Amino acid sequence: MSKELDGRLYTATQVDPVFIFLPIFEEARMKKGDDLGKFRQLDEIMLIDGYPGYQHLLSIADNSMQLVCEVKEIGSSKFFRLDDSKVMGWLYHKVCQLKQTLLTLDNNYAAQDEKDTLSDAVSILGEYLKHDTWLQHLCSHLRLNLSEVTRKEAEKLVPNTAESDLGSAISQEKNKSNNRSTRAGKQTKKAKVETESRNIKEMFSRASRRKN
Image (cartoon, rainbow, N blue to C red; front, side):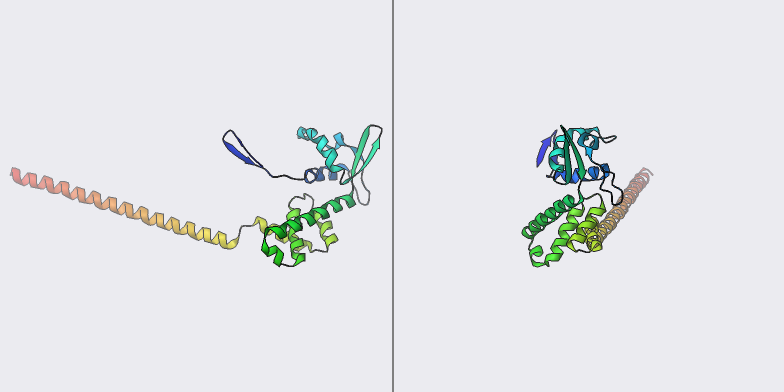
């Protein structure tokens, strides 16, 4: 989606709001050890110091977070608690969707081993997860090597070495060319000044001889 405003272009892509709320609900349940954590009301969970805007997202959180939470209703009040098994089911569904999408984007994915494509999908998904614990659990569930998945994720953030070296070489050559041009320009200017100076001296010399 893109929109032009005040002469500037803004581009945005759709994102599942669960990715945004997941770390908030993870912290809100105050889980310790094997304890499952606490049930809390939505407006309490979304009350975040310094970020009052989250209160405007209550209806979105209500609709989306029921997918990954246990919900208890007491009277007219709802109480939410993040559920590990539901989160894992949601993550697995996301991985399967992403894996199928990758196969349609590039023939290289279609040609490589299925496990490698699965690892790539988990790596991409890991970029949206704030807590590495979820990524670790997901890798264990799918029998993937966590270090391999995180390595792929890190490679996406590091510029290609060959491209970097090429860019550096081009930059250095450009600087050398600029330096040579600068020196040549200075030499040309100096020669021109010296020539003009000799011409002026010769002019005065001829004028002096004629006078005598």
